[in-house]
Length: 383
Length: 113
Ligand SMILES: Cc1ncc(COP(=O)(O)O)c(C=O)c1O
Image (tube, rainbow over all chains, first blue to last red):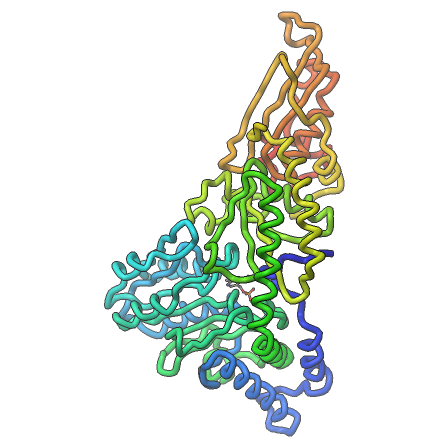
């Protein structure tokens, strides 16, 4: 199998699994227990917190473990809103992951004005628009660090500075960047940041929200005093240990891995673009995640491409409606001004730690034939 | 999205793909904006004014659509080939979907075409 869908999820690194193993059957005690095994589990959680903090240049007490990226996004936006009643405006980008977008939309039920920020054709948010809309009534601006579909990286530091001018909080969904590019939250001036373990070789079902000291937010889950009263429930100790291990591995490997993946990705694009006519790159040509390649194949539909690739044991994804369970193509591609029929023909290859050059060559071999077969079937294609 | 074996067979090896030069009938429906567009071409015999007794002797289709659209077109073309127009005028999308061992609910619209 050739797996090129790392932005959807990544395999758990064997070194992460190894680090987690002890915390299932041996050091299984509850970190809230005061006996020795309980205290050992607690130490493991607190050590992991330090690892995350160190990785992102935050403080350990600014790390709140969650069940993943979705919960971290919900906790940031709802938690902040429910802890205050002065500011009534929420600003988010039109290309946010559903975890942020649908949370913001939900908040309009509670009297919040929600404003969606347009992007240009590369998927970069409109800074002037943000500047214009932000005011003393703005509670939060939430703009993702990099987009999961097209990989475009946002100027988050500039956005954070706009937020701060008006005393608003800046949140970023960094689920696609943590572990892929170096992140220093002090330098980026980020107030809240969401991350998720399974996107960078950690386990699924664990993530974290980083919240700068001094920012007040409410818990979504009430119960015990876990996570300093901000997230009740017995800690997912093996998951948290695995998440920390994933951070340590990433920290050591990021610079080389970024370079390696970018070369492979660019070879993939060059190989395909030289053989297939009428394909267009989606996303920013340079300011983009090194592992992400998204493009549209004119005259054919994405799900047919994915299933044909699947028949060759190649795993990728598409922004076509037909793959999403709805009848609309990707909201990200539409927001970038890409016509619906072109969005339906989009393909995303996302590379990762186990991607090999031979696999890229195989895709370059196979895809042109698949496209030709489907185009021959298409009433839109005139040769 | 889970497809039946039959849908996948028709998707991978669709029957009657193509066009007919000088067809006796052409029908197009759908809209590429929604990700579905399909064109059918037919040839009938005998060429009488009584359309009901005309028999489909050849049928071809082209589609810009997902796997379900391709499979539905392929299956429908097989089901109507050799039949008279009166025999097929009551063919419903559900019958085509049933022949394919079912379609995911969200995909039923594809068979509307
Ligand atoms: C940008 C982004 N945000 C949030 C999520 C949700 O993360 P999780 O699957 O950990 O809930 C994902 C992954 O699907 C994502 O890509």
